[in-house]
Image 1 (cartoon, rainbow over the protein chains, first blue to last red):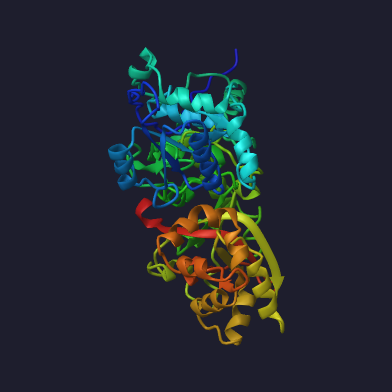
Image 2 (image 1 turned 30 degrees about the vertical axis):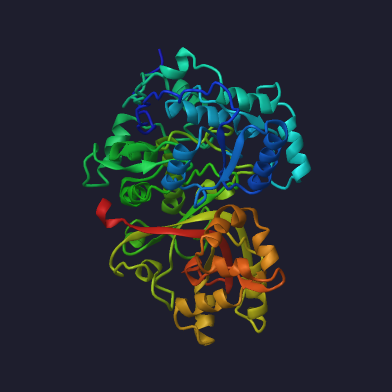
Length: 96
Length: 422
């Protein structure tokens, strides 16, 4: 029988996963304020402008507001607070 | 909304952030470089991963009712064990490869005896927490102890006397396995007495595979990064499109003894008799030349202008080159850095056309941060400085067999004490 070796696991320690509840969904979008959050990846502004235009043409009862964080890849609490205070829903994109 | 190539990654990120059912929609890759009409076609087309109309997935994601999975996401612990189940050497080698815990070069299996021997290279307790690391800002931070770093140091073939340098690299929290789509690597430069104590090479072939300490410390940095941060697996936790050869090993020592200038760590606030390691993230480009010769200014300006404006250059100069610059009046590194900053210029249109300048510096320019705000106001054809002085690093490396230099991509990430990990 081959000799058995005892070796260490090379992996680090991941943080515990804490389950979160998703926010309640809307009954519909008519009359609602929808924020489009531009995450600042290259050319995402052009994409978001096109998405805004699509909503305006096809779902004009939805109020679209474009918004950007202050800095790429860094949390912007003020922006999040504004979306929460003034919006009914948000879509983030486009990128990671 | 994401592009399709990130589907596995973003679903994994959602899961470990406790929201496995968060609504996601996917457009084709790429968005970068596509016209408004192309992007409109994405919006009016199919979801590139899930199928069905993309726009309908957006609307469905915002409306309707939540399911049980949406409101009752599981909390769970993902602890990793200290030891694996005992097995044969052959099976364990297969296991390490199957789990992608290696760089696919042969490893030294981290037996209890070998790890215990590595731990003798430091006075720190095995259970002491060294730091936390992540492959990208979007990923969760994993934590690791002295013992976990030792395990990876053993795997790389490092010797116990190298362990304080490896611990310092781990303590930096800077990964050598960035998930960036640009395939970033992390280069490291060791300064101070530890270089000679452990036999590091700063002379002939310092940046190549010609020294046990250089090679295995660099490899250990890579292995510990991928294993302690939670992986570096293509299409899951590594998204570098082309990969980077520097990721195998990219650690060397500065040739302080033959340099006419102060050591790099002293430039960054350390005493000369301290040992420290400095990190540079990039590894995208390499320029090469000799001299300084009569036309060095043209060559340097051209080489620096060919660098990527988002990744600051590290000038790695053979001691012969460094002394040649002293002969031309550059009696400090800072004077050469200043010259490089002032003489590396490209048209504003070219600067702002860079994808990463667009993504990461444009928001700062819009917010009024200098010098980016002024760069943004420049006419498209107006030459602007590519690099601030603080973006440029100078180190002295080489064995004086030739008056040669390299310019390597490497944004300075900081200098970490080695002595604190002895």
